[in-house]
Image (cartoon, rainbow, N blue to C red; front, side, top):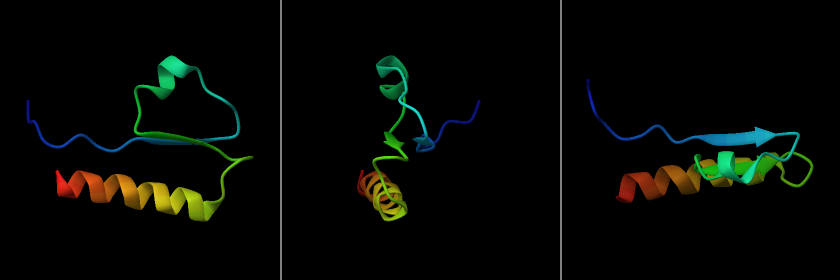
Length: 53
């Protein structure tokens, strides 16, 4: 099995998700509270932190 960096996982959803599910991903954004620029900023932040590690 090949190991490498984990693929970042972001959930952009219309509904709240269970806290236990949210803990398993890098970010959860609820569409009614976040904008597309927020999503873009979240993706960039996660990718930049992965590249710095």
